[in-house]
Image (spheres, one colour):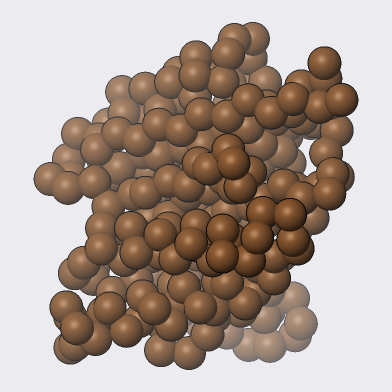
Length: 240
């Protein structure tokens, strides 16, 4: 039998005046993840909060014992955030990232749009489960197909997909079977910009409770400068 232990933590950091990160942690629905308001657009906090509310509402409306169509509920959230953007920022819109998963029938099922990230620590390995939807990454993938692609260095980290865009975004989906000892972590780029994957993996696998492990990660991201909000959700899969 498997036991889940999860916790979430967010910190405004040392530079930003507002925290535009939000997290999903709903143990009843077994729903976990993060959303991050898109920098450079107004209403980032509104976008992230509305997105999280829509995802949680959709999962509960579907029924906690039923299979959730992740692409459909992400597209619904995108439409709803875009509509909110037309009301509060008609000239520019609003947007956020979204990286989350839910546990159903012995598997962790993830959906991802943007540059927040999900990782899995399993049997001594630390696996990044998501790819950033950035200009640089999209160019790399297209070049691998033989296309000639150029971009300005200043735009390398700009998002190519987000929640709140006018058209439904492509949604990356990942499914992993639950294994005793697994640790999943969802983090915004305020963490990943400050802590490289190798170090993040060591910290995620370190001894301690979920609260202790996550607190150490968020504290380190802020101590290294905290230029952005830093948010994480960690899930331990234990055997009882």
